[in-house]
Image (cartoon, rainbow, N blue to C red; front, side, top):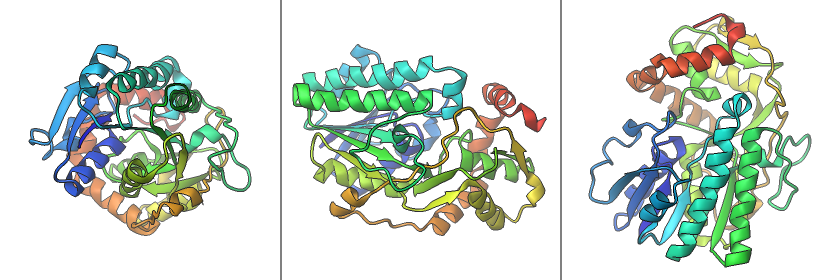
Length: 336
């Protein structure tokens, strides 16, 4: 089977490609990626240039690029997105263009090609802040950041193509992913890499915001399962089912790394910061999914990867674009 993956140079996409090709030796993948700041060609070292992998540099919002990449694909796994909440607060335009319009362009190309499955990867943030209980796939969407709103729009657009055009669409909504190859702008790799450099980690607000943590390899296995066994037109929550306050996450990682509490620096909370996310994953479990990586093991593996791959993340953090972003976002730190 030929599979089209979008955004395969990014964090989740690259982990998916590596695992999928290893588990499916008769299948091939075409990766459509614009290679923005969040896409790193080094994420697929050892895969690029192989006989079962092809890469097309292009924008998912470009109809010609999308049509070219879609040729001969039996299925699509759509990861490509602008995904950082903080950046969406600074400027929402790119998020609407990529996440909403880019998804529309891909759906049109998939409809023209007659693909057998189109899996759209989304986020638990579309449900908004959940004070109690767990979000179910049928719950009302209530996004509270420009990023989440752009993803909610793309979810609804994808599902509309199932109803209107009978395109076999599936939507997944995942909780906070973590693991190797995550861009250091995100919370956990920023924490780990800052501490490896002896720098403070900026903790938003009172640190009591609750997130559910999902190891990226488990997420990728869940996507494969849903791609094979999921019902078109349906939404599937994919959570780690391991929730904790941000304060607890900080203390767990601090214990693994052996760093001082002085390297935790409180900064003002970001605007509209959702208090809690939590997913009901019973629908996914009914497909037969089980987690394979515990939270503690996943954290240790993540820390070890960043320790052992300093060149990977230091190139990103030394770039002027990252330095400028960091200064804007965390001015209260008075660092770099």
